[in-house]
Length: 289
Image (cartoon, rainbow, N blue to C red; front, side, top):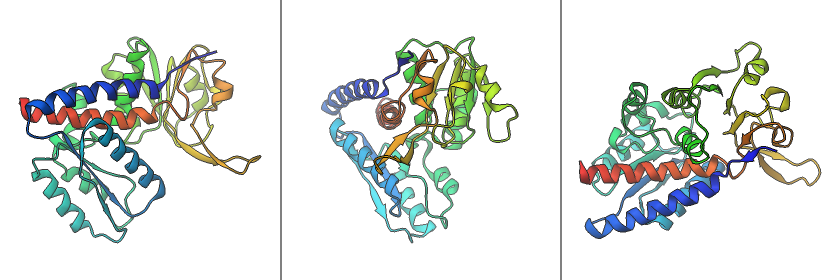
């Protein structure tokens, strides 16, 4: 059976260290780190994510400056709030919760965030730093994947990695981070030919497509490391209750893989943790230069 890569345990470990750092830093500075999360509308999943982030801030001692705006809030109003947060010395990290209502241009808002406060690591300046191999704020979910690989001593260097998905949130920065770690990387997507065969060649397979249980045992090389980024809510046929599953059919792949992340409890907790990590990193950089 594959080794289970416990992202929840690692997230707790990192958050404990962050809390200790915040406690130490706050003794020597006039304020704690601050994170502002903007949510527009009442998307149920987004509301749950935002609550989790706010609770995590409270546990760690990070000041929370959230704004929950009505779905009909204008582009100009959200942009004005971002401008105010950019100038607010209490705020070290800014996150715009996606998805946004259709009438709002998400890219324009993400680009408006001060790169030094870009807690989600999605500003073009921070993405450019990643491409150039320079230090900077990193996209949270891929950074969480890399932290899990490091924790379990899974070395990407020299390995063949396949990233299934090409979104700006996960797929593209994930590929760049693996490349930075000296893996040989292929990005696969809906237009890729012989997709299953390509995935079977991967030493490290990262699934980020948002299709429940898409990847079965016949897609996976024996002994491969399988990282499941997908979070999909499905209805259980027998109980009628909903449950979370990943993009990987865990039951069939676990006996074959060398290591695998579960859903839930794998990469999901690491995404929130890396958001907090980025906020604390920005906070320390603002004070230390």
